[in-house]
Image (cartoon, rainbow, N blue to C red):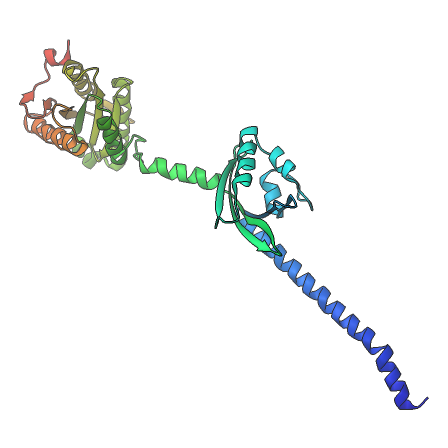
Length: 332
């Protein structure tokens, strides 16, 4: 056979197999790279508490990424069914999920559902409808929001609590006052200022000052009734809400105010330091003196300063003269 004929025969028989082998290797490499990319994306999503899910209602086919299996305490596997998904949930949550999937419609741009797991975790499901080859599928993310919810609740509590004493703060006071005003709940707002606190703080330092504030908060908590509420505004200022059975029941408020002054006038033993302080109280009635939180707070504040100017260790009703703490005011 001529040499050129052998070359043509080689090209016809061998070269196609070389091309097939080359393309198979390229295809395998592309598939491997795609699998690596998917694995890296899956790991990144899992690290963020996210997983991918897909639901094809016509074929009743469900797909979960490996992270989603972990959310439900399952080992990752190739297939999962809707029935297995529902079995991972408590009956009421399974019913909510089934109802949600049944109500989802392709004409909606997006949809969302929050599930509570039997072990106490929480998942947020989001989904978007996609049309592929005239078949609709719901594709979205599942996110573990358990820790996010816990952190949000913690931050919310911190926003309404005094960091030092743990008492409700000004934010809590204003919110709860608005609620009481809406409910027309009669009561007395008491603005309390500690007399002599600055001298203790300056003489013994902030650590003793903080310890004194903690002791005052504890003593107030043991002095007031269960229906009453204590707040710390900051520094040495506290506010007390005294609940009344009727708007005219001011004698009970006076007894509690007198008891507070007497208890806080008892010396505090803090480690090696004994501290003696007193307190000045301003009282404003709801709704007789004012029916708005800001008005009540300002009136009680003004009455408190009147008590301080009148010798301290006493209480003053808003709009009235000083009431010295005598046996009659203490209810004894």
